[in-house]
Length: 421
Image (cartoon, rainbow, N blue to C red; front, side, top):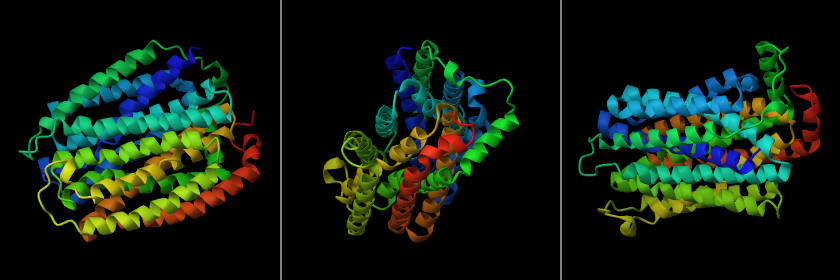
């Protein structure tokens, strides 16, 4: 196989979905302006995205090898291209919900397939962890690009303008390019081809048995809590910039890109540092620094005087400092994902990736809805102070996961799910 071409295709697939999935914060702000919905009502967009990810992952992850990784990814790209073309044609809050539902279901196909394919094109756990971090950092580059792409279509002089919906024509074009690249890229899936004798019920049972393995159970709780924190911040940062820091709409979206940029940088640096330092101690240090950053940045936001801001040069310091939290929370997700996947045989990577996607999606929905409701009831600062709770939980959960992974990680291959090697 031409591994470099497969890797390029996986990266481009992730790039497309990075923009679409993480546009939810921008779209939450825009639907409030365009369609007059409340903060709590707008927060359900996260649920339309994440619950469909969870449901679709549950339905397909246990037998993704029956579908085929390549065919699953091609179907996903085709679905989102069609959904993007529909957005500017039928502008409404319901169309927006439909877009995120389609994006969520398609991302389930993409992420499960991409995570499982990594095992086919890497030779050992170090290479697996390295490409996982690079993949997730590239995902954040997509998120970063999305902020500038969307802000370029926003009309600051008319908040109710729907001109920003034209961005979806560009996104449909990117999805089409990704589709054509993948279509022309050969992927050898023979090593994970499904046994014809196994039923779908057997496949589902295998995934559920894997889920209740103690080390996997602690892992999925950890992943849930991490994504709850990350999505709560990421989805509501544009609204925080607009309503708390009083930035213009386009600038609110652009400056949210600092979070994406710092997260991408954090994952890239983690890929380098993990060769020199234990992943556990790296994550412990990062979590403590993250908590400190929250306690420094949010009091600065409270001191914003509400003066008119015209650009990056006169934006309040809090708009630059708080998003740097991405630099320190960034290594957590790829590090724990690689740790659990590397301890499993290739045939369990599909079901395990499904569990990762399901509980990440549920965590994202929970985080956005909690943040949205706290934002509306108690204000934006209180909503972001709430991030200290999952940070504290992660210190405990990652410690427990690390200890269990060291003790039982080698046993998972023999005791969980699909019958070992």
